[in-house]
Image (cartoon, rainbow, N blue to C red):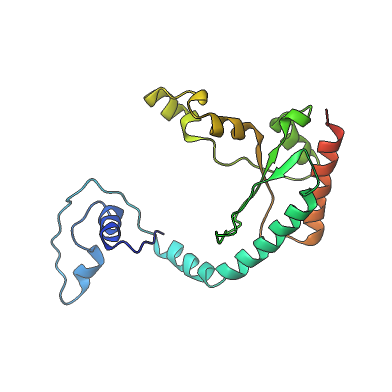
Length: 194
């Protein structure tokens, strides 16, 4: 889904979302519709299926409830890690209404005797699956090979990349589950402090 208040951009997105057709294909079945259309741009097939649309509509009805639950859990994580030097929660600006769809920490690798991969493996050994999101674009093979980017071309992104870990976060997460995650993080960083 894409939203915008820019009418020109909205028209371009509509055009590109279904093969670059110059007419809405669904209107061809209306009384004023026509079967004829042309492809006027090299578009994409970005329209949702009926099933995906139905799921999306049902999920939208619960979106604020989900966001509120995630926000509460994120605040609990923030509190739990507030005094932990080796773990930095990402800062959320007060001016942003954050979705809290992920909870990302940054490991202070200068204070730890392990790398992120070992941290994730030790979390997994405790029954907690973590992930890493957002490899910097310039560090993906396509962009590196196509444009010749190197990690050092974007030093801020390259310095954050090896330190980020996404901890479990989902609206139905229980206090006990979250406490288990927090305890595991604390045990691991405590055991591997320099």
